[in-house]
Amino acid sequence: MILDLTSKMTVQTHTAFFYGTLIHPAILRRVIGHSGPDLQICPALLLSKTIFQRDLSQEENSVRGSLVTGLSDEDVRLLDIFEGDEYSRDTVSVYPLASFTPLSSSSSSKLSEDHTIVPDTIPSIPPLSTLPPPISAQTYVWVDPVTSLEPRIWEYADFVRDSAWKWVGSEAQGMQEYVEVDKRREMGGKIVRTEIVSEEEEKKVGVELESK
Image (cartoon, rainbow, N blue to C red; front, side, top):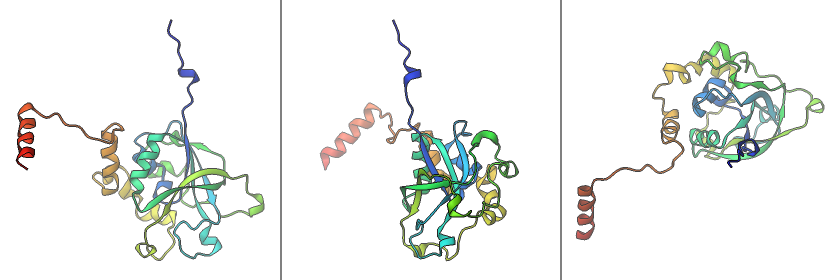
């Protein structure tokens, strides 16, 4: 007798807050390597968190971005690689600014279609008394020296207008930011690459080790 336990298995998922290039749905899909059929996204607000570890005004320090639910362990591993050592992944409380929308409602890499999920202009900060209960999420916090940053506030609308096309579709082929992520995906989740060595090569290595 074989018992089917798949329906009883609970798969752990993660919630993340993005406030930079990963706000763009097409870039997020490119990093995680799928259309996000189980992911939900909405605009969100992070209050009183010094993301870049420098003094900012309350308006500047109230970070607006996207809240995404349903991320898998492998999604998070790929996101960690994409963000690199310049960031640490911290847990924060984030306030949703609208209802969640399926990320896969636009599975195309066309920038125009993703405007329906994430508008070019992120919603303004509402009165704090009207905010809904916060949701616990993870976000990437800059840990490198602040001198490595440009002395200006990053704006999503400017990114969509000036640079997003470089990150999406054929224009992004071979882009350095994606190289390590693609290597990890090609390895199927393994962290060590193995190679088949012939008997002759193995003997040669043994001789070299003995000579040392």
